[in-house]
Image (cartoon, rainbow, N blue to C red):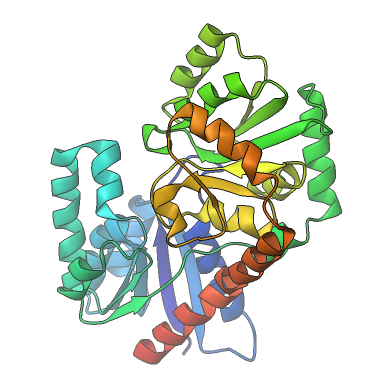
Length: 338
């Protein structure tokens, strides 16, 4: 009988980070291949009555879950003596900054419990390495994932969709464009990026995403009378490679070292401006302080980075392709399960 793997991922707002879901989907596709033939993957999003019923009474051999949702689902799976793998991505410090110390203390306790009862933990962030290693029976260093081919070789369809979208918003694709993609939360310091546009009057800023800080950002735009800032909304991820193709510079002001957006920017071979704390891991970014004047200055500098830097950075991101990350997950799961 084929082994059955339940992969549970968090329920997120539409078009927000699909990273781990893509890895699960890759394994789901592989499990259907005749030559693999010894396992199947069922991907579930969020915890509902149907999942609870499956975990408590359904047939499966193993559960994979992102840390917090994995803790809840994993406890139920452990009650039935099933294998449990925890996929730990976001560092607890990031949660502490966005949600406060009290909530973070509770979440950290839940995560620590999940690490202890799991059969293995896939760890993506360096920051929690010591915390995980003290508790997990087995720790496997993992990576973020990107759809490398989509960004390195932008499809005609993605280009046409992006061009149509930009034209519908009266954006001239021949103008100098700086782009940010992702969430609009305080941790991303987008207010500094928007204010930098006061000093970049011959540039356009494209903000692709959504989040709790959006109203604040729109207020800044209105107060400062900025006509070169455009909100694209939360886009289907298939649009993003096309948007980046029309961008002269991409920006992130989040100080977390590991960011999926940096990898996608690099795979698209676009110059990147990022905080100085990021440069240690990604030396080919144009490093900046968070002061708006410095951000503006470094955006101007970024367009002059050597093309060889962009090519080398792009080549480095190939190891983050979802297919290669899925190889690691498949190997470990099959090794411990089959």
